[in-house]
Length: 445
Image 1 (cartoon, rainbow, N blue to C red):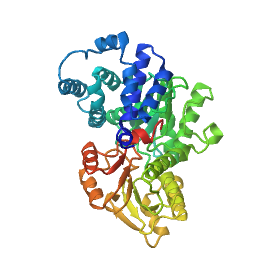
Image 2: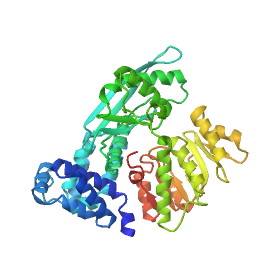
Image 3: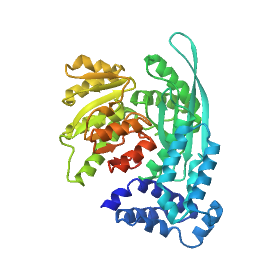
Image 4: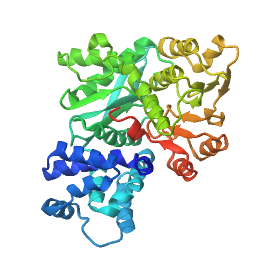
């Protein structure tokens, strides 16, 4: 069991490499994926790798990728690192995501360095699309935002990944998200590739009419690159069911076609039941099973949660249902602290504030006499048993990791894309704090 836990982060990454190699070499994909999964669960991770590394297919692939020499592994990894950095100089988020995967897969490369070439291939997106998004605000002013869609890998199927509307969005952020997406999607063994998109548009403070206009302009540019057999976007930060509805309406109008080109739609428009709840619920179900394996449960565990968007809301809902004591929620302005834990009724107020009224989380204080609000702060200083980062990338840094350790946090369960900085991750792992990585948690999300 111990070895299985140690391999959980490697599993989705290795699985994707296996699938990519089997596709390239013409081997039976389903057969080898199934074999690799079985081998992993039986603590024989290398069996699946060895199955596809034998014979002339392996020799041919190694020759093509240029990794059949006798240089030291560290030297080859450094050469790959330098090549990737030179091509992506001003993209810190993407380079961080790449470095994390490169370092994590070192045991795989030790077994057979052919996979260095596969990783180099994966690190280069198949297509990068950037476009202008013009729109008119309610004052009649002409505004310009920048839109992106990075179609990373279609090895396993159509590109699949969300759209993010946030002022921090740039090419580096979208590439890091798309890079992560291919590993998450590969773990499902479904025919889904990886991609991501978005814009530096900030929905915060915009009127309904302005958001409609922006979504229509964004989709007018994006629609030529997506389709149900080509690229299927979804939501992310700043893009919820409302925005997906506006985007789908414009797509339908332009293409004169009602098809499954966007996921996350309202059920009335062909969306799936409990789609909104799926991610948050899934994180808790996974955490529950991890604790069960340790003869523990979520009941009475003090939980610190960051974020107040779709993932955080339903994660908190399921935590309350399972008996957890949720102490915090947050947005980009700060966090609220409820010393006795949120109730279902109190959570409903937060959902109304964020989903209907579109206001800041500090408005929750109007509904609670016991809550406190901490502006421009993160919740990681609050003593807890479990921490659930569900807001954004790099929200847990070295200082935050020190606070979690000091406050005797037992487990960190990721509910956002790359929420833990790589240095903080090393620090948490060094003290043997149980760390559940997003790639395994959010397969297909």
